[in-house]
Length: 137
Length: 137
DNA sequence: TGTATTTTAGTAAACGATTACCAAAAGTAG
DNA sequence: CTACTTTTGGTAATCGTTTACTAAAATACA
Image (cartoon, rainbow over all chains, first blue to last red; front, side, top):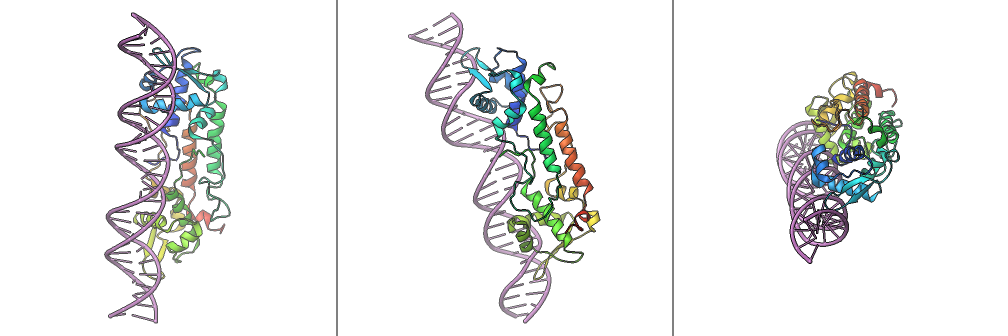
């Protein structure tokens, strides 16, 4: 089935896992096995995603028994945009949905719809921090 | 650079080429070389895309010198949605942006934004036929 | 008839995302 | 110290989608 929205498994793991970790409270640590169970995703893939979030300073980690991951900042300070860009790279709103320099038409055939879609998405994830998901456990 | 909109090269070729063909008037034929020049895309890839559109009854074709492609229906009768689905398959608006059956959360973390984005796109391409692009040559 | 043009159809290559695996490092607990 | 748990980081394999290429078929025209 065709999909117009390009949300990768990796980004999905990052979003869901970060919310789950945030919901464990300030010092609760969550390990990969727990996340794998909760999100029904591969342990291996989760590991890789978590590593990026640690490197970018959004998560801390402890090895060994009872180790795991925990938020490295206040939930208010971590937006979904932070998480997305940590995994996927910078999300820019460009005129051409294909990022092409040349276009055969004077006016883009999509007229602005794709720009608006990207902007909608970007605004949403920029305006939602992890704190937003704490009450609705 | 990260992209949230999944518009393939193939779909882009289909959209642009169909509009260019429509703009050539009722019986004008357009060949692959012309399309390749206009759209700055690969001849080979354009060929493949055109083949699908012919099979699905949106284009006719003639081989040989002065051959090429032409609309098989009135421009009013061909929507961008027709073209998109001919290339990509059926575009459905699903709740989960990942089309997953199970979700760790009661309420989707995107709340409806991704659904809305897909609906916006689908509405736009459904409401725009090739006729829409004829005046603004 | 013969040559050039053009689509067609099948196959091959390239690419990116995902998944899998493993050895090493770090920490915990007995 | 020893055994166990867990993250880390690197590499390799797999998979599906997209893109590229080529030979064959069809057509036109001289």
